[in-house]
Image (cartoon, rainbow over all chains, first blue to last red; front, side):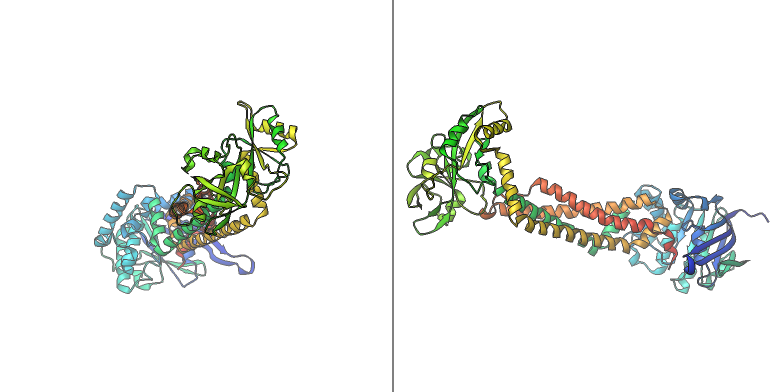
Length: 237
Length: 381
């Protein structure tokens, strides 16, 4: 089958430290993430999931044959070109949300637009409209401290989607949430982040959310040990 | 992203106020101490700068400053007058007799004996509060400065005709004038030269200074050189003599050391407290900066955000500190003991530069931490 690939990693390696303290986090990882799918990276702690996600997101440099994201060799990009690539093409959802406490929900969700140099008012309005679609219409002016964990992650999701990126990377998006909130966030992620020209990668430990995946890549000791397709039986279209 | 930077700054109220307070406090202390120091140094020169008629002061060549005088001979006056280019030259006596009021109150005073004919060095017309300078021509007449009057006649209204005893001579106050505050708190008195020399212990020579006016078109420095060449005396312009006096006090008293220590401490405390608070503020926001970097904010933009935050706290803190210093000097300007001490714009400018530099250097540490921060930090729980 000839799939269009959002992410193509070949023999990716990453070391931390030197000499006796050297740790090889990635040992020749090969990974293909097709467009239109939600791919999960799973595996035990310390197996290299987050390192691989960081490399794919272009926030960590790795060595190896090739890291191709959205048909662009990100391992060949540097400095402002890499930052610009991330800003235009990637959306981020973090484990700890990483919302700016001094900004309202709508302002937080508008940060990628502001970073791209768009004016404040239309950016915040666009972010507020997206929050409304995510069921947060009555909380757009609330500050992160006034929101529940689930609501904060929805704001983070809005921040990841607001600039319509083609690749969304999520690091443990449900680990700080209870089961119900986790389900809600994954439903939103699956509904909004998966389109034919988009791809989503989720790093997770949470096996309750596995059914939301189109594809699950299992990692151990810096390797991808298996890639399996899953039925998205819990996801409502 | 500017509004994001400002909201991040003001979001943590306690640190924001702490930063502003540290900078305001440091600004106030620096402007206050440097301006008081400048005011005190200016006081050492006020008897020179108050003489506006003459441009050149001639004195013994070993004279170090205005308050320590070796008398010249009367003949020196005539020798100066004989120098080509001198329009006029007059004598000036400066001594420190003790003045005693009838009720026993006494103060050492600065007595300026003015040339009997011209009265060069007398208070200008606009400085006279009561009486006129010409009244000095009366027998045993003196003009006293307002603050000196209030020292010798406390809580009494300004009035002419009151008498004082000076070295067994009874003198009568014929004028009261404003005089620039002298070094120390001595009252300032003016009298004719011929009278003034009688008010202090008799020495063989009494002439303290010769005051000189150059002919029109002749440069002051050139005439000074001529006088020195012809007489062997020292001749300097008023402003040079004032600076010579300031330098004497700076080199030979503990004043600059005292003020210097306070100014140094204010600068260090201000810089350290503001810098540390700013650094902690950045460190606590490191993860947020990491998220911004990951999302796609460039390093240049983040440096701009941090500098904007630094500039904002400097501007607000500096404005507050300067405002407090302004109020302080407005109040002290009205008090006799601290009169003449003003907040100098030069000091404000210098303090602005020093405070900006201190906070800028502190923010460089923060900038460095953010620049070396890998955006991948946001993926670490």
